[in-house]
Length: 193
Ligand code: G3D
Ligand code: MG
Image 1 (tube, rainbow, N blue to C red):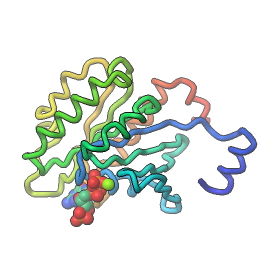
Image 2 (image 1 turned 90 degrees about the horizontal axis):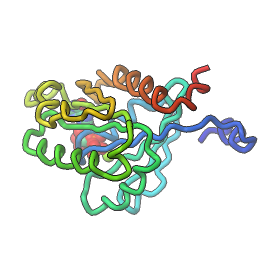
Image 3 (image 1 turned 30 degrees about the horizontal axis):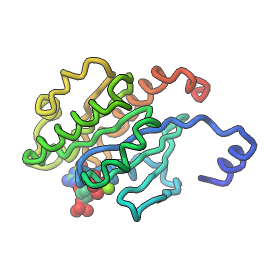
Image 4 (image 1 turned 45 degrees about the vertical axis):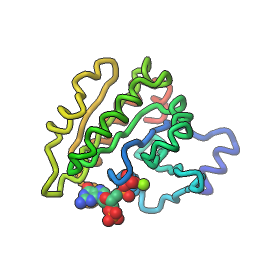
C-alpha cells in the first residue's frame, strides 16, 4: 500500500476493494500475469509465502484488485478455499500448451464451481488461455471445449487467449472483468467517478 492509500485508509476514505481470486494449476502463468497487470510502480505484498501461497495487490484504472496467487497444489486447498467467500471475481489461468494437465485443470475448475461459497453466486469468471505463443498451444476455442465452459450458465464468463510474457490479451480480459465486476457489485459504481 502506498503512503497516500494508507493515509486515506486511515481517514476512512479508502475505496472499497474488489477481491479478485487468481486461480489455476501451478506453472499456468498466474504470477506472470499478475506481474504484468500491476502498474510498474506497484508494490507487491507477499503476505504469507511460508504457507504455500502469496497475496498480491494491484490496481486497474479505478478498481482495486486483490489477487490471491495460489499454488495449484492440492495440499493447500483448505487454505485457499477460505478466501472464496471474499472473492468478487475470478481469474482462472490455463496453460494452453499443457494438454496432459488440461484434465486436471478441468477437475479444479469443476471443484471450484461446485464449492458452496461459489456455486450460487453470479461471480464473473475470466479465463486466460495462456501461453498461446507456444507451438503446442491449442486455441482458446479448444480450451473452452476441453473445459466445457458452455456448461457455465449461471455466471458471466469470458475466455481470452493470452501470452503473459508479451502481455498480449491481458488488457482485453481485465477490461471485461472490470465491467462485469462493477455490474455484479453495484456498490463499486462510485469508484468509476
Ligand atoms: P504460476 O504462477 O501459475 O505457477 P508462472 O506460473 O507465472 O510462474 O509461470 C510459469 C512459467 O511459465 C514461467 O517460466 C513463465 O515465464 C512461463 N510463462 C508464463 N506465461 C507464459 C506465456 O504466455 N508464454 C510462455 N511461453 N511462457 C509463459 P519459467 O521458465 O520461469 O518457469
Ligand atoms: Mg506463481
